[in-house]
Image (cartoon, rainbow, N blue to C red; front, side, top):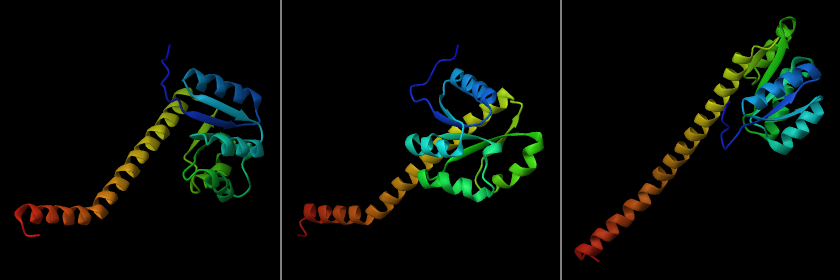
Length: 165
């Protein structure tokens, strides 16, 4: 049995196919994720707005006509939404333009559970790595901007201790 982490990742599944939704929910909850699901794009956007899930799995049949529109909607509520698309082989030609517009990966149907778990873990690790990188970037900028101020204070303290003031 898998042990659950304290900070479990929350996922959103937007899918019309009830069988596929049930498979995904069962599998992903057994892997230790919190899973929200819905059957319409509008309901999915409302759930994403409310909970800001880390990863969104979208069924290909619910995709909007223009690829940029999907990513723009989710980007309103999150700076870098992680979107995966679940598609059958005959739908892949329709789905490829979405990869150029911010979708991270295509999950082929029927499901390959090992690949799905690998894709989700990779996205979570990437997200954690980017969060650390952003923190270190902000910290280094803070140090760089505040260093002239610290140098001034050190010079003033050294001069006072030597009796120049």
